[in-house]
Image (tube, rainbow, N blue to C red; front, top):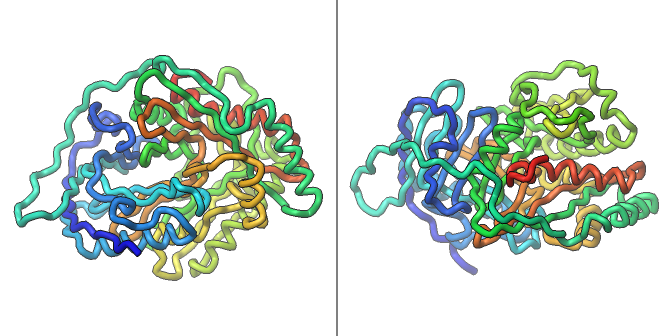
Length: 444
């Protein structure tokens, strides 16, 4: 058994002037896979470099205990760290970004990454944090936020799209098989995904992808961790000052206007309850409502043991994105134990929104029918601070860079129930792939 190596870290946070665009701070010469992001509507965190990671420390990144091992590694790192934080806001001080594989057996297990530099802003305040290993007693220099050179704004040069594990023409037959298994009583719902491979003549620029996603999909959380890049509309769990929140999405319909708008309506960031939405009829088919109910119930059942109270709205609202409408429900409650945000994310994963019901049976069906390793697609992705508070989304609308950054696997899926239509499910994956196609400069 490998004993994890625990780094001793020093983090220093200083307040800085707010930035028009956090992505402008990321140097152009950093490794694309080292770029880190968690940004929504101009607020959030970006980072680069690597001060430490749970994988490098020898902590297992695969298996059913991957979340618990990473969480314990973080507790131990925090216990030995020196933290100087003059702001004491969510995202200041010592911070780790993380992403985890959907399946415990995946070799791409993921883990936690501590960057060397973190820049953040929220509610008109901005900061920069430097993080380094404690090797001597010298005082670290103050972190500086410097303007980076421009990243490429044009299409990714020499880019081509290729079939993934299951070609698009074969996807309806995969869905038909899943429906047969549902009708046979094997499973109530299963979420199936397919991949597409984007190949480029040169390294794909992570910052360019992030900027495009953030500009077009402002209502989502634009993320990057270890080469996993995307814009997720689904907040798996937020823990902040004892308050627990989760946004559940399930049930999707394509927008009927063309071209789609470049911006979306503002959405409360899980802070305010949503009123009844007259557009519910757009996505209120029996199939959508059934799929959504499964997802909400699975999240509520997972959060209840960790909450002193939990509010589950009776009716969903409509989340508007440039390409689609989603049925959405925001759950909120008061924390009832000492679970960290990562502990809560582990308890929630996999929800019915990305796996199915019952989850164990659905996971086996996913492994059989998808014919691929999802890697960290549909797994938890986000960040956490020294207190254990943080945000964890579900890695959706995303792509995974290869080791040399010349190719990226793009993913999209949908929930399958007895009322699903195979051709409509293929169309839904095409719509969901539009986000990463746009990010790569291929339009919608």
